[in-house]
Image 1 (cartoon, rainbow, N blue to C red):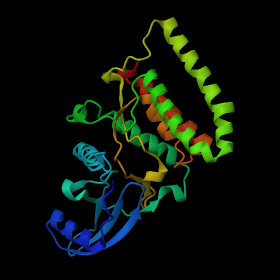
Image 2 (cartoon, rainbow, N blue to C red):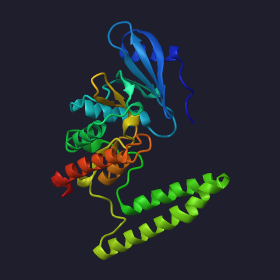
Image 3 (tube, rainbow, N blue to C red):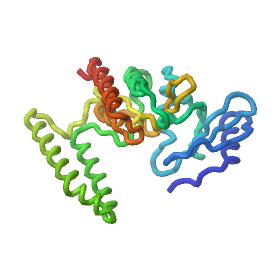
Image 4 (cartoon, one colour):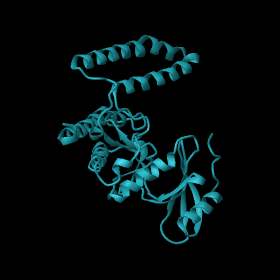
Length: 277
């Protein structure tokens, strides 16, 4: 069960305590599906961001704070710098980024900026602290794990389709039959190769992934450069899943040409890395 949303006075009090400085005002910045962010106007100094997380059984605060701390320590400047956290209050204080939601007005170079960031992440795979990072949310490290995740989500769709006959028809006539063929072919191919589809991908071949990444979680600064936010799902994942999570994320809705550009950039980067050869 989620905690109640905090008020602006609550945000000011928590922010003042975490910052060790007086907050002059707190204004709700944006409410996401899983959190609420306040822009804190400080009595002195630049504004800060206070993020309030739900208590829904997942340690969203810990996962994001650890991820952003790791990135900040290793010189990544396009993500918010963590300042302080209060796990008991489900709140964390971060650097504030000004900017417009990038998804509102996509630009030609966005696919390359997304790719540049993801490629920079992979250069940190062996950096100090990387091995203690958690797995990404809904990470997949084997084909059978992907099948299990598909079946779990299919069960949810079946329940949702009880009142939606068009959805049920699509599932029964298209989704389920075509996926069954793909799964059968996958298992046959693994058998031909003498490989175990339930074997986990070796840690050396995994990628660092924001998991939920794209223009929907980016701000465009005045200079046109993207700043990336929302790292609650960040961690280790399969490189192929990283590519698909980003290229076809419905929140970004990248045009086909830009999605292909992103995919090509990432494929080239992974192919050039000895870890994935």
